[in-house]
Length: 106
Image 1: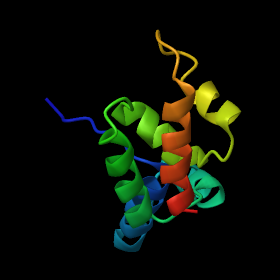
Image 2: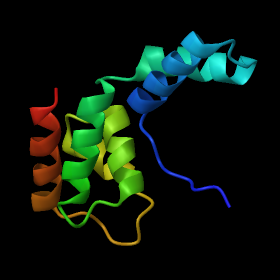
Image 3: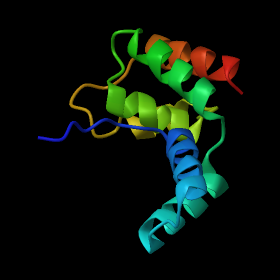
């Protein structure tokens, strides 16, 4: 069985750019590369560090950490939106922690 891992847009961009040098990309890969080039806000190394730091907070899942790295929210409402599908709401102090971590990577 193949392992599945969540990756940020920045990591997608890095992976597909590398594969592009090795040969022709499929049409789907080309679209994914174009999307990642247009919408990734930080580079791959920073994204990995940000995701790691967010998950180490203890209350941010890997999925939400990737979403945060992809969107780089700067307002509490943006963070609340990412967590809107969670059963429990995120407390104001936790949102502030997330925003302070994200701010280091802007």
